Image (tube, rainbow, N blue to C red; front, side, top):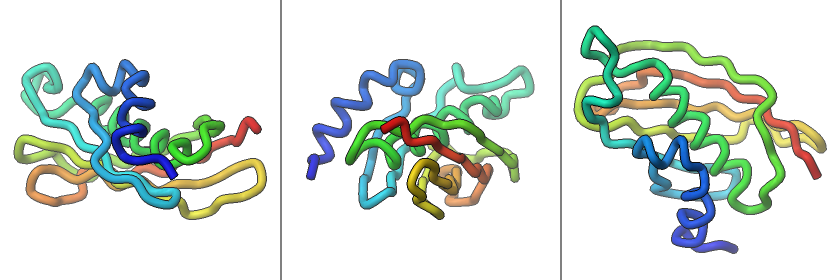
Length: 130
């Protein structure tokens, strides 16, 4: 089994997410927890967190959860529900596998803000290339 340091090194290559601040905090069987410290670059014209930030972090958490043990899964469908405006200085995304089939999988990713409130719920279907 890979150690968290190895997983962080592997996913450092996910440049869009990591250059926007996403980090891997925890890994487990078909599970990951990733976070991001918010800054001005993450805000929209209204001063709130841009929707793409929620999605980027959720997609990153899915990628880590579904690939850290055996890289081969890509997203084929994603559905995001924005449930509130983020408060605090961080976002956290927890990805958990709901169904792991032969060629596809389904994950639920909850994105919470610095106060622990769910601000986005994401369902992602993945396709296993190998």
